[in-house]
Amino acid sequence: MFFRSFNLNLSKNLRYVTSELVELSIKRNVSSTKPIIPRLIHQTWSNKTTPKGWLATVQSVRTLNLEDFDYCLWTDEMMDSFMKEKYPQFYKNIFIKYRYKIQRVDTFRYFLMYHYGGIYIDMDIGCIRPLLHLIKALEDNQEKETVIACFPETKPLGVSNDFLISTKNHPLFSRMINKTLSFWNRNFILKYLTVMLSTGSMFLTIQTYIYPKNVRILQHDLYSGYSPSSFTWHTTGSTWHKTDGLILLFIYNKRRMILYLALGLIILWMLFCLKILSIKRISTIVQRLRKVCVRKNGIR
Image 1 (tube, rainbow, N blue to C red):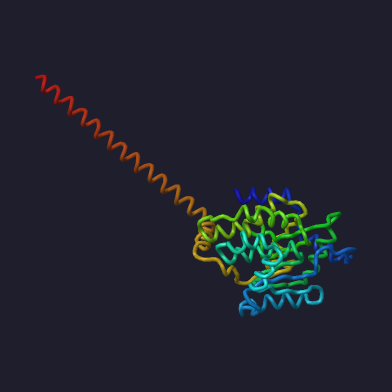
Image 2 (cartoon, rainbow, N blue to C red):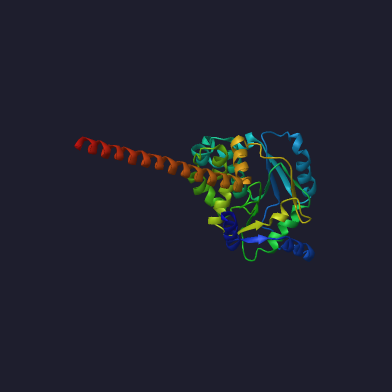
């Protein structure tokens, strides 16, 4: 119920990019008079060598968008140098103090969107269709906006941070850089929760919910890879997920069974407590009866 109401609230405050809107833009074939989203694709990895499992996804991103976009693969060394040079205060106070590497990677993509704009896409995501069609659909429906950002809808709730589209200097990313990333830099006990809430998808979802201005949500069908209208497809990712993440995902997937089991245990515990209570009461009554009998025998 919570997930449904949360997504309902998101839908009230945000505008969605639908497959119908994209297809209409393609049919109209009207180029934007002034493109505002930089034609630049960012990806990140520890070095310049693409893992074998992601060769197909990375190749599809580059091949389908080669003519329309510049491409940049940011290594860990490049990421560190960029943050140290361009944002030294954040680098010194927060960035290098993150407990987990994935927090730095998550944060870096937000800085890229703010500093350069364009598209960020995880290496485990491939392209089915040229991303230019999606970018033009966003720009053709921007109305009078000079800044725009778009994040994919994910299930069961919120948005994902593995595929980001934005103009340069978007106020949402400015807010993150100057305020919310430092505020949410906390230890939430489990690694999975710490990452998700401090820099990951849940962090982005919360920020989008709080500051929905000039933000679009990419309909899940355009991102899932299971629909004819999808622009992207997905392979195995989540390299940072460990046992705690699997446990939390298991709890979510089996939430009803766990809820019923928990209720059953609570009921059993209550019955057990009531049984103990009744035994104590019976014991107290027996002791009182004995005292009464002793008194009566003493009087006699």
